[in-house]
Length: 81
Image (tube, rainbow, N blue to C red):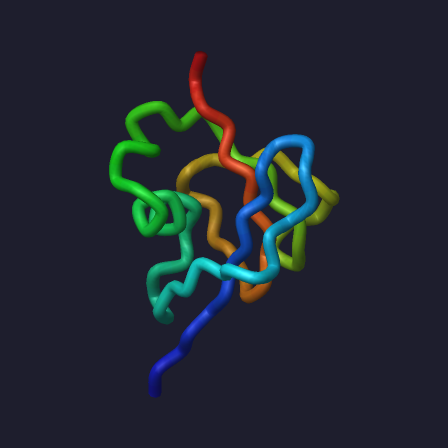
């Protein structure tokens, strides 16, 4: 059985982009997998991520690279300065 899960990006200060979801296959559900799907170099500068959706208790919630995302979560990646 193949699971396809959709996650959405949210640029800082803007609304989430629901027109272009990041598609991850089942089993690859972490914030790190999400970042690697966008671009491999993102994890080198990764600080944390803000997540809106069912995978977090608070909206938004600051999470680390190992946080497991749920379908239709919105993610904003924060890089180190």
